[in-house]
Length: 331
Image 1 (cartoon, rainbow, N blue to C red):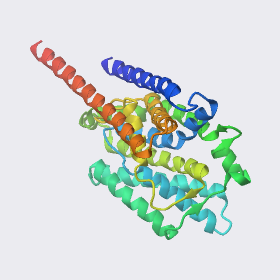
Image 2 (cartoon, rainbow, N blue to C red):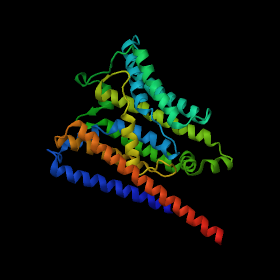
Image 3 (cartoon, one colour):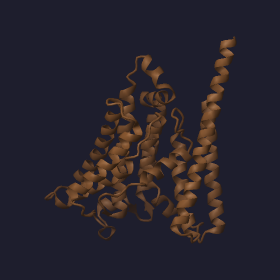
Image 4 (tube, one colour):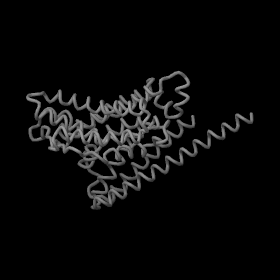
């Protein structure tokens, strides 16, 4: 019950922070309270949102995935290379390959961590560099292009924008609902939380914890692959070797949303709220006329504050466990 209360509290705190930011920028930003700004917030949220949804599963298990940013860009750039040089290869097949590439990198991470025993930080850091290098090698460090909005191809309409509404935001909402069902209503979700709370106990109960942990990284790679499609639709031109730093935005959104870096606690609703907090902060600071370095500074302050709150929550949780253990021993 205390865990559920903490999750609800984190959701309320995150949502309250989002409302406060919106009110603040309404009075300080230039034209913040307008429909174009809402569209900009949605448009700048969805591909980061896909990364954040995937890495939420990983962080709940107590792990981390630093490779999602470069995996997203590497998947997109290889898919663009196949589209331009595949001798008539249909675009829809290239999009499937993009998702498969991201999923494969996720499986690679999971196997290194669960089968070879590498720490998640080191394994995914290595994959970050490997994925960036593979994208550059395959494309010979040449930028790759997808269909542009000028032609209004089905690719743009389906994955970027139909009229004023960014279709990527609609896709993100669909994946958000699907991910909530998986995390809260399936065996995978239950084991994800259990592994983050006490992996050894899960293992001793006869469950192959390593397999379920590996699946969490596969989900993270799968979501990075989908994020690659929407990033390609939004920006059309993808440069090899990029993407480093994007993962920090996604991880920051997850932490701001209340998912504990210690594992075992988290919610996808909080993650989505965290994604919008990051987008509102970025757009609001831009409309205030602040330079990019100042925007990065304030964003860093917000992330540090979220991590400090997570540390305090973890300490309180450990203190409660110690008190319960003491009471049980004395009883």
